[in-house]
Amino acid sequence: MAQRQKLSVSVSSSLVRFLERYQRDHGLKTKSSVVERALEVLRERDLERAYAEAAELDHDAGDTADWDVTAGDGLSHEEWRDTR
Image 1 (cartoon, one colour):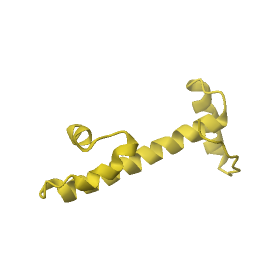
Image 2 (cartoon, rainbow, N blue to C red; image 1 turned 90 degrees about the vertical axis):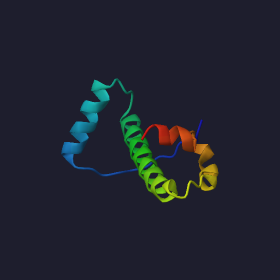
Image 3 (cartoon, rainbow, N blue to C red; image 1 turned 45 degrees about the vertical axis):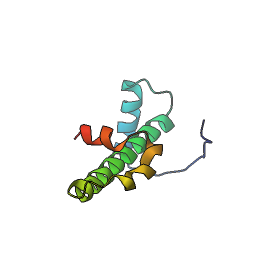
């Protein structure tokens, strides 16, 4: 398990209400769990965008060598392309 670090953030009251409602509605134990889930979604979205850009660049060339360095994220080049 990854080491945890404590952060302090300030957000608007409406976001706090949303966070608390999301926590309750999804059965999460802590507000930190909600923030962590949100950050994971943002990271996944950025990864998807990066893959889309890279796939467009590689599409015509048929070059997959650069995809080898992405193995640590759990998706292979072919698996990702099949989801498009």
